[in-house]
Image (cartoon, rainbow, N blue to C red; front, side, top):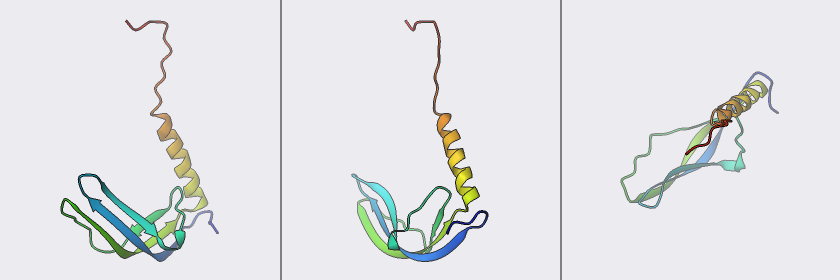
Length: 99
């Protein structure tokens, strides 16, 4: 149940897949139990930073803390994202022709 002003926080396991090759450069985290992450939610993966030399890939298990956003925080995040998106729009109405 999502709360109005407070965050719900719990710890879960996760699988981390990291690759640093000529074809791919990525780090993906998959939470156990298929936890869905929504606007304003936060995930903190515990453990030391992963540094891979070029040409390698690694998959490992870690613990993660998930903080579910409150209803207010989720709503504010969605509004902020919408406003940030509208900054990308640049529409000009002009009677001049570009030559």
